[in-house]
Length: 340
Image 1: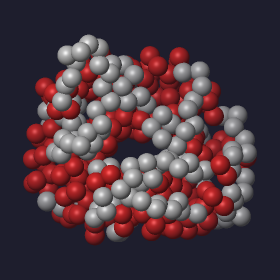
Image 2 (image 1 turned 90 degrees about the vertical axis):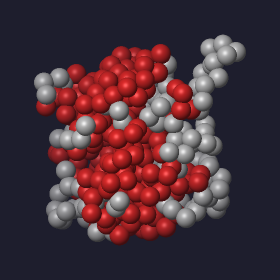
Image 3 (image 1 turned 180 degrees about the vertical axis):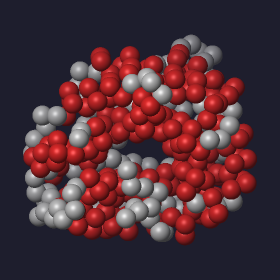
């Protein structure tokens, strides 16, 4: 079966319109810039000429990815001309070289969350075969180099439900790493695999009942399972998964299988929980795909994915900018998923 969700074409136009508006909106902005002297007070557009919008850098990067993905998967359902024009303005070689230079000068900036989304964007535009594919190479190469330098030094992973989560950043980086390996450079793919095994291969009986945290937009349990699903052979993964979350058939722990409740979409931290619901929907669907036909865990995961998506898809647009500046990305991640 194809797992490209039929609802994608129904919402693509509204999502694309929200994304185009957000990636061009410079303020409000959480710049996250480390100042080195009293005069180091740039505006977002001065230091991030490509990714100055969407409240913060990583949100802008991931929303560019979502727009390119919509262009690839549902070009007839959106204003493709407007989307392409906007991308052509932002994803130019000079602007992306400046973004790469900033990361070179600030090597810890947006690690690993923003790095993962930037590499996923690079993979997406390369697959799109647009002029942006060549323009984004300097940024992708800079992040590749940063990952290769950082991963051997990262003794321990971060298992949080927010930006520092190690597994999520590596999972988003994998398509680019595979593209590089296909071109003869397997260093990044091997580094990701080594880190994932070093960090997670011995994990058993994961305490997923501790989820969610009050500001989570990622599931620590599912990010780890998603990454291991991608780097292990199927039989290896099935053996690992059976001991990592052993009670899926009973839908336990309960807190992992129930959608998070969002009480205030105007509160940026509480609003993160909408992202958690949509990420869980994506991850559970991906994990269900990895199971063999007839595995009784599959229907449980798919039902849970549907319930989580239903809880937060209505909030993607029309709620508050603290949601709208980023949530479409997670909706597209879920709705735009395809068989792998």
